[in-house]
Image (cartoon, rainbow, N blue to C red; front, side, top):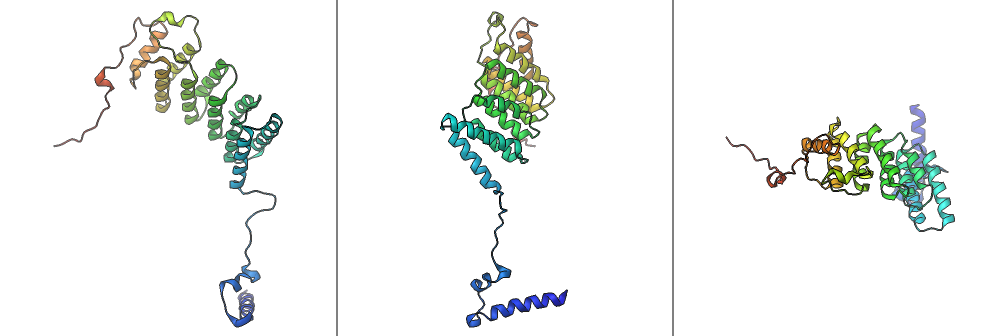
Length: 258
């Protein structure tokens, strides 16, 4: 084995010395077969960064393309999502698909909510919150299902936040305002059910969404929010008092001196 290695090195060295002027420089070495530059590209397979760029370009073109072109681009993106084992590529396909107006876009995004990767589900959920074109109550039911059942904490938190964003604000002043039990009432009660969730981030997101929908200012006082939900349910007679001015001031932790 050592003898073969020595022979190879001698051949390389003799090839270099046989060059005009016997000068050894980088240009001469680069022309030798042993040191010839080789591409790392695999025929028929685009590098990941190029595939991601192509997917993004399809989404950008589809936003202003003709109806016929949109059909082709959507079909290509759906195929990319369905055939790619890489969750990053699937997520890029979801983001691009969300930019293209298409009658089946909502259905595709709802189906993607079953993806095994939480980051892909998160992208589909964000896309639905920004682009959903169907009945608002069906979007609400979809978000409620996600915030109840999804196995990933970040997806649940996103569903809670989006529910607060898409639900019409409804200032609560008296129970007579709840005649009809509309979409806002349903969202408030569902968010109230999360105030005892085992995950702190979910509880915090629920309080933020409740504040946005109801206009009530209880901050992060979960006890007041729980009292408020009981009021909405008719279990207690009065609304809880809102926070005082001093309670709204930020708490500053001062160092302790001995």
